Image (tube, rainbow, N blue to C red; front, side, top):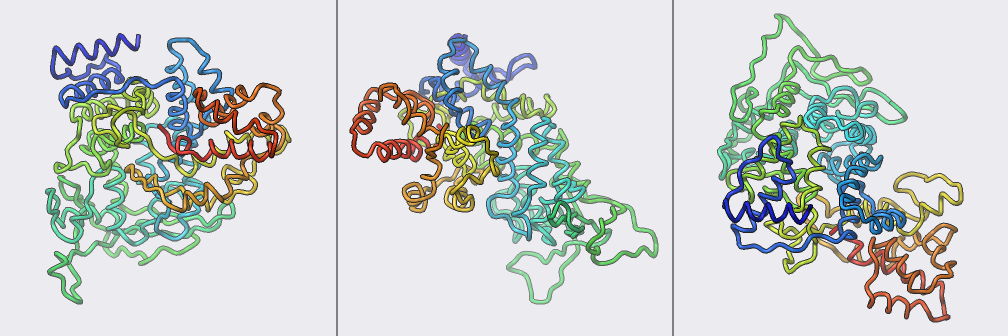
Amino acid sequence: MRELRWIVVFVCCVLGGVVAPATGAEPLRDVIDAQVTAGWKSNGVTSVEPSTDAEFLRRVYLDLLGIVPTYDEAVAFLNDTAPDKRSKLIDRLLEHPRYAVHQADVWDMVYFGRNPPGYGTDKREGFQNWLAEQFRSNRPHNVWAGQILRAEGNTVEQGPPMFFVQYSRRPEDAIEAVTQKFLGVQLQCARCHDHPFEGWTQLDFYGMAAYYSRLQVVNVGKKNKLTAYAIGELNRGEVLFTGSVSEQELGKKGTPVKPKLLGGEPFTEPELPEGFKEPRNFPSGKVPPAPKTSRKNALADWVTAADNPYFAKAAANRIWAQFMGKGIVQPVDNLADANPPSHPELLKQLTASLVEHKFDLKQFIREILNSNSYQLSSRGPVTDAMPLWYERARYRPLSAEELLESWMTVGGYNDALKVSGKEPEGRFRPRGITWDYVRRFFGRPNDGVGNFQGGLHEHLYLNNGQVHQLISKQTGSLYDTVAKSDQPWGKRVERMFLQILTRRPTVTETEKFVAHLSPADDPQGRLHEAIWTLMTCSEFRFNH
């Protein structure tokens, strides 16, 4: 069936030249394959072969759950002969409890990054738990994105207000972040002068920043032993426009700027009652009252509207990039005339599908992952990490979260805990591991736009760091299982490869590992070294 679909797509491209737009009855996965194949043809590109089952299995587990499969999961899938086993696996993983946890990790990095500005933003469990619940319940993307921008409640019990805590009393910084992360529009160049490449002016920038000119971060007391913050919005206050940076003068106060949407009309709000008074700052310890008119909420409504010319396109492009390695527009936060899409019709179709299905992310992700384009092999002559025409699957470094939890899985740390009857101390607290070190050394590559630069710190940690602590010798661990096995070394090496790399070893790999492990001198050290080698090799470090 999969081969037939490729033939149909190829014939359509050869005979028609340009693939016709998708109809409502045409699965998005077929639209994706038709458009990607058309891109290959028009650019003289040859694609690689489809991925092997082992490649696909590891890739889809990491992309959806943020961990590699267990040994039992790998064996069960690889031995399954059902023709639809990939589609069924995708469905199962989308309903797995880890799906929500991992997607919350991914989007938390979108909204905050590793080192967010603002006091207290490193302690954002409320936001992270809330975000996981959005994926757990499959709440529409535009709904929960709007909740972030409305910032109701507090940072501990609800979560969303934490986004604006990063930009306390900095409306210009806030609007830069909102336009990039929610709309894929970079306005920062218009902050100091009219944009040199786009149509945005300085007044456009400050007209958008004016929507956040009245926001204040308010300490509303302790909740669950954490300081809780709320976002208050005053009824007065404007941003001041002082002109181009080159024309600014010392002591110049500037002109107040009223809110105005990009490409839209100025925001109108009713006059305040005569004699209306309010404090310049909201008092701590009290929930701030709602304003007479909320500029913040008005902007949230506009940003997440289905007909917003930027929001749905930015979301479709960002999610596509998450699973395909790069955006159709890359970087994903720069949807601009000067940065055209590689596949304009495909981006149009993806955007239309997301809107048509009311921003249902599971449906959208399911279609991408079921496409032949996603399921290509990562092996081929093209060496780019993110192939321009998607002719080969991308490879990306594992995030710090993926790396540590996958190490815990393959080393058998979690299995040993179960056997001992002990409960995990937390996601990132295995014995002997300092999460801050892992985050510091491996956390930076995942910046949302695909940049990666390995460094000496990674090599030093992998060789001399705490990863050795995860090669547990306790009952139930991989080390214990292999050491106590009475199977020949070839079978035990196969077990190690399946558990760590989610594939069976080649003949050459088996021979080399058996030769290393067979001698009687220092058997414990040799086995530890073999497991460590697989856990720290480049193949494990990347998702491919």
